[in-house]
Length: 296
Image (cartoon, rainbow, N blue to C red):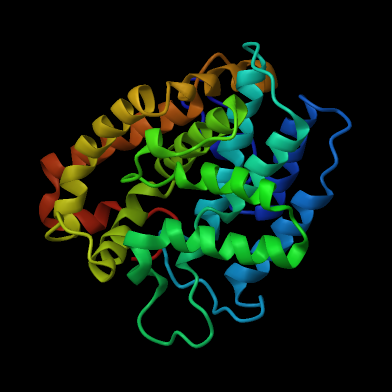
């Protein structure tokens, strides 16, 4: 591995959800060697079935940006943040850790259409997908016998992924609930922006936005042009709204891999440099320079 240019794929095959699950377990076991993964395994397998169209009452995921990989990317990033935080003295319960990871798995279920919803794709729910994810989670928790207290804990965490949500208005149950929510809000952004195919997937994001009625982007190229500014806004959100928990990522890589580097930040900054190069020199044929890993 080139320690100056590490990618997330150097540490785990991010394309394979079961490899991600295994690395999440190894990461959590560094905090709790005797952690019980039974509930996480249950939710993880149900989530795979949901996205594949094998969960009763739901269609296969048909959003190409907010897909299964985005969810497992977020799941992995959250586990790393939690582990990194413990290496700076933060203290989490087994219950809180388990519920936070389950929240990560559930956070974008609102994009999945029901069997009787035949119009368009799940992208039409972009503006209210957080509420729909909470609704799905509520129904799922009831069916699986989760307590309403645990549902409330997870609902608060999932709401932290909404960019338009006023986090100050969330009634967190305790400090741990608050911290884990802000970690998921951070992991959601870190996971997607550090994905090796992030720039290619922005093309899909534009079309999701268009179907979902998200204003402010006139074309694929316009969204690409606004991405560096979005990253700057993300950095402000990380520090001001999400309490700077992104800094825990570096502590994970130091402890788990002996690498004094925030690989997520490194990857995102590399993406930003490349997209600026495309915009500066190749804006007339930008798609030609976005060919990694996924067809456009």
